[in-house]
Image (cartoon, rainbow, N blue to C red; front, side):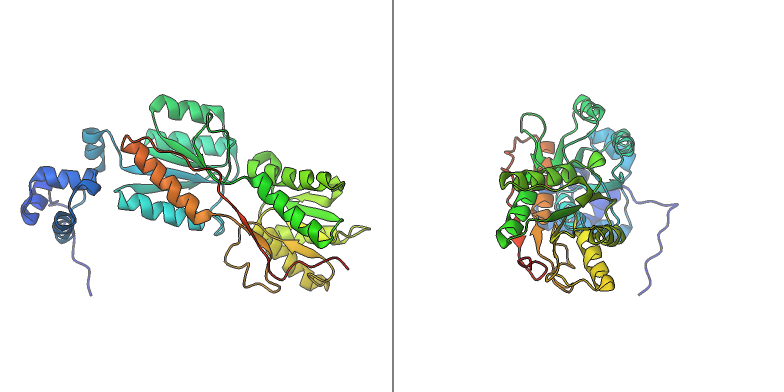
Length: 343
């Protein structure tokens, strides 16, 4: 079916849409700026008229009139895998229902780049902002507070009196993994971690593993901790290095799931059997975890719930409502085939 031609030289106006829908122009304006206050029947009529007339509201004019852009920003550390995709999709769906448009950017774990993205989004009038992690340039917080822009931190926990946050305790989650492996009998540990200097979640996960080991009188020497940018290839390389140590670890804890995929791929190349010779764990329970061979024992994090609650929090704040923040969310160890007691 051929798409209708759009005559850009003769643009429909809000008044045209109102007449076609049989409503007042003020009702069309309410629909565009605050759709949740318009009845479903009226929404359907206005939406039909908008589609029929190829009406596109003038964003700048709407922003001047309402002092709101109807845009919510989200800045993620990376968009090159599906690590954040589940949360992002739910977040977008929820804010779209409330009449907001998502503006998304990636900072590649670079604090300076993150500040630039925040500055740009604020200059373009975003109404609210989602950030990942608990460590950000203080100038970001100062800017958002000075402009009165609501924001939410995700994927971590911070003291509530400091910043609004919806997430889980990375330190406890990683400690749970270490305890699970120690319960299986493991004593020789290693870890493939994201770079801790630019990633507070990675730092807390490494800290959680070290603390759990220390509580049982064990330790993990520095040479058995390998930091790399997140990715399966980096996981392959790190696993190869760990397996070349004079004394091989019996357990490899991966602080991010792509590392674990890489470790499993490299184990096949090296002829090392998982889990008979070494156990491997992941973190996040991404789609491949249950499909790879052997299937991956991992930490299931509440990605979709974080996206939903973060969206609801920002929508409520933009509506002038006070909203209670949830307690830190629970995570779950999903036991599959990649772990076994050491031989």
